[in-house]
Length: 511
Ligand SMILES: Cc1cc2nc3c(=O)[nH]c(=O)nc-3n(C[C@H](O)[C@H](O)[C@H](O)COP(=O)(O)O)c2cc1C
Ligand SMILES: [Mn+2]
Image (cartoon, rainbow, N blue to C red; front, top):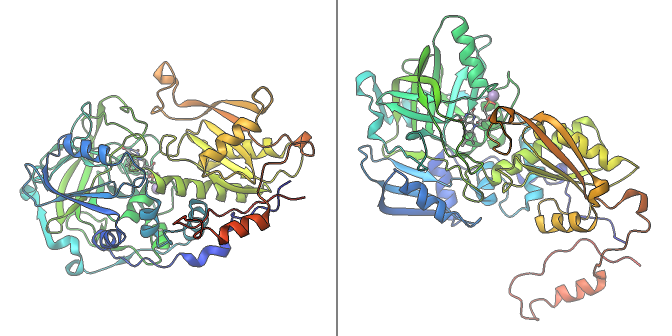
């Protein structure tokens, strides 16, 4: 029999761990990352065309790979540098960005993230002259985006992508809420950039709104951006909510914006490279494909709107942020996304009010946290596990894409897949414990279905890997250490010749 399980710290008890962030912009955050030995400078000359991505891919086959700052790029005239693997699979770099203690476990980071993501701090305006992004300002014919190093990532990509680790600002024509999204952007000319927004995304809804009024849609995009703006821009919030307020909440201080040259939208004052532009209805050019987070090429080449660039702002020797999309752990959508998505799944389940839910984890190796959600729970009544599985599968934060929803008991750590595989292999009876949901919310990016038109209708498997509720009393006890013996051995750990501390154990044998 197991003892009470510890290790599932509720958000309240560790909320104090998240302080306002100590950095002001990408450069100060990189200093912090470097001080923590999590940054590697690459001084040798590198080709932006496929070589940059190849080095990044090979350097990131380990989860603990550093961020990579490429300092010399072939063929460019702007002295720009490129940062790859900004966050990647590193929970430590996520923590340094969000002001969280980097030594916390992933489960505790999820709990603290739940707390900081509920805070809202609206942005503030700073004077144009105080905005670092205004070190260089170009308008009209002075703009030549070919002066910057613009990477082509994969051999089959449809072009060079200036925007992958980017943010795009738009406003809604009614109300003016500022939206921030990460939408890929392919270079189309010296002052023309293709913008791909998939159906339903707020950037697309904003643009349709302006076009419906017969007006062009103003756009601001930043291509060298701090990690919090990048992370928040890739999260889904309500259509009326501004991601800038959430970013301020996470940082514990307001995002700084300044006035633009040509558009009414503001621009991020501390970004590295920003463009202002407009999207005209009917101005489209072929765009894509791009190698995706799934590990495959995404949607086929298709006509997409083009941003006509009106003004460009940058810092001297700007640092552009580029996000390689690849299989884990080489994908920029890695640890941070898994932590944030897991936090929001727990928020949803708490709002619904289902009892007994302890932890959730959307492992980043499952197509950047999209494929699998594991939820741990304390079984309290017949049918409880089936209820938790069904609610998790369809809660707003988990419903999109997720194919595998797995429920485990409280002694199984969802962030530890060795533990999860143990539960699947010893507590799940497939003939009894697996259900399927059909025609669920999915995406054309999942290549498992044919014909491709069927892909937006997905399916989900609900796997009950909890001990069978009907037979809890008969279920064999897990093999666990006796507490006194563990404590005695732990006290002798160094004497026994082990250099690192003993593993922490919270569950012990009970007579
Ligand atoms: C690196 C990266 C690239 C992305 N590329 C696109 C894209 O090209 N088009 C798109 O619609 N969403 C893309 N996304 C997902 C959106 O950023 C995400 O859905 C976000 O919620 C969009 O903001 P919105 O909810 O305000 O529309 C990307 C996300 C990341 C992290
Ligand atoms: Mn939005």
